[in-house]
Structure formats: structure tokens, C-alpha cells
Amino acid sequence: MRKEILEGCLGKFRLGILVLLFVFGLFSIVGTGGGGGGSSSDIGGSSGGGTTAATMEEDIENKLGAILAVVNAEEVTEGLDVLTSLLEDENLQGLVTITPPLPTPLDLENLPDDISLSIDFGTGFTTEDGNVFRGGITINISIIRSTTGLRLEVEALFNNVTVNDSTEPYLNGRMTGFIAITQDGQGNMSVAGNISFENVRVNQKTISGSISLSSTNITLNLTNPSGTITVTFSDFVMGEERISGVVTLTLGAGETPGTYVVSFGNLKLGGFTLSSGTATISLADEDKWTIDMDAATSDGPFDIIVDLTILKDEATDEETGIMLHTESPGIMGPYRVSMDSLTIPGDWETVPASGTMTFTELSTGKTATLVFNKTLQNQPPYDYIESP
Figure 1 (cartoon, rainbow, N blue to C red):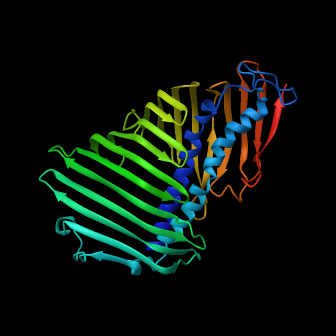
Figure 2: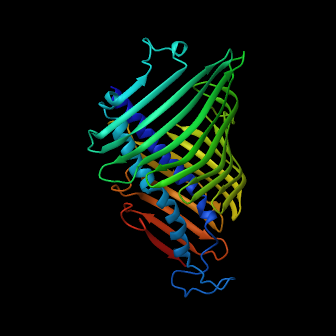
Figure 3: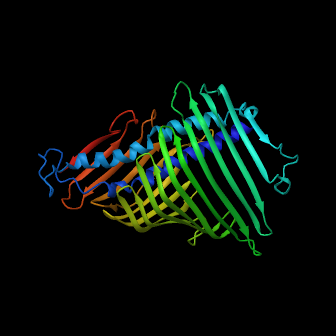
């Protein structure tokens, strides 16, 4: 039973990450430069700085390539596969040492004030999927209680965790943080927290900086939670990517239950800035969400409404992918863009996508249609058709 539950949760987690990466990765269509400057058959002319202007085909391929590179990045696909392999393994519990031993039955009130959890892979722990882990992980937790809530302070130490035959650490470094939860007399919750990365290495990428979290008046209603959660990135660096600024999630922001609004405050992603704007996510039907994105960016406007449907296997009810569709075209920087049943499978590496995505260059009226009919093993994973 434990394995089935974990498989379901991790499946949702993996699919959710791919959804977020693809949808919010669309912002890079604005953030990677201007329009094409010519058809695919034109000889590239000179733009203002004496550089060669890209054709429309090259421009779109570069922009979508930036998104697909993230979706298909080893840090996402391989990392999630490895994590899933470890957490689903039923023998992992035998490697975990908890000091002092937790009381039985387990209850928040009788937990020790200080807890240390360690995982020692020794000379090699092989999961059921065949991945071999070496090294160790130690997590130290301190619990500070008060009359209105509690505070958890956490330190995680990754000691040269390697995977399979690699001699480079898959996980290494130190993370520290805290989360404080308080509740008022009306049952509303407030949460504050912070996590700092001290040269943490994850799958060949070094992470540094910090992420802080704060919230106001969170009401945990299962059908329509409400409240505001603010996430602030401070000098956060992952590999070569630097992120700073503020993202605010407002729960229950609309009349429809289950509506969420993501607001951007001078959010900088490398050289691209989301100066202001929102993405409103609302439940339109079972397994179908409407995402209304309207933002001002450093490189132009972004205004589009996308219907996102979670696809499932009818026999197993497991998520198999997502479908993106627009009822009418929207604006993405230099292009008017529409999507027609653009289906992205969860395993895009081996299962081909389907549907189309159409770009019309605002300055010239030229139109390009991308027909998705290939796996990610093909680059680009679509056929390009331009007119006139």
C-alpha cells in the first residue's frame, strides 16, 4: 500500500513540475528577444547592432528550445526518476536511524524537542529499480513550541551522495531553514519560513542563496482554501541561473472555488524581468484548469488564456500528460499565439506529442504553424510550416 501511495504522489509531483515548467516557461517566448525579422527563405539582414537578424523559424526554434531544454533537462527528468526510485523502495526504512527513538503512538505533543534522522547508504544501497546510492544524509530537527503554534528549525547535511557509477556527488552540501506556524483564535493560520543553501550540489548544479516564505490568514478549507503566501528569492542561484524578486500566491482569490492567483513583483530570471502581472488559475471542470496570464515584462506584454487539461488513463486513472488549448489567440511579445489541443505526454522522451501551436508575427503578419508529432529525441520535436 505504501508503495502505491508514493507512486501516486510522486506521479502527481512529477507531472505538476512539468506543467509549471512548460506553462511558466512560455514567458521565455517574450524574454528571449524580438521577432523573427524575415521568413525562413530570406537572407538574414542586419539588425540595429550590426548582427544578423534571425529568421522567424530560427527565432521560434530558439525560444521554444529554451523551454524544452528545461522540461527535458537531466536535472528534472533524471533527478525525479532517481528520487522516485529511492523513495518508493520498501527497504529504505531499514537504512534510517532516528535519535532518540520516536514514541509510540506518534503524536505531535509527545515528540522530542530535538530529533536527528540519518540515512547511511554505506558502500552501496541498490534500489529495486537498480540505482545504486552511496554516501549519507543527516537531518537535524529542533521543535520549539508556544501557546499559539510551533517553530521547526531544520539542518540537512548531504555527505557526498553519489548515484550509480558516477564519482561526482549527486547531492552534497548543507541546507538550513525554519518554518513557524501560528494560529489565531478564529482558526486562521500564518506561516513564515526560510531556507538557505550553502553551496549545495544537486546533479552537477550548485545552488546558493535563500528563499523565504510568509503568509497571512490561511484558512484550510479543503474545497476552497484562502489566504496569501509570498515567496521571496534572495540571490538565489542554481547553476548559471540567477533568480531574485517576489512571487505571491493568493488562494481563493475569485468567485469560483479553487481559484489561485500568482502575482509577480520585479521577478528577475537571469536577464529577463517580470516587472508586474498575474497568472490566474481556476478550476473549469474536473481535471481542467483555465490559466489567464497577463504580465508586463522587460521585453514586451504577455496576455493569453490557456485551458490546461490533466490527461488520465481510463483504466488506471493515472495521469499520463497534459493538453493545452486556447479558445482565442493571445499575445506573447512579438507574436500572436494560439494552441490547438497541444498534448504533452508525461513521458515525452518516448511518447510523441500531438496538436499544433501557431505564431503570427505582429510586425509582418507572417504565420508559422508548429505540428507536434515527435518525441523529445527529435530536435525540434515538431514540423515547421510557414506562410506566406
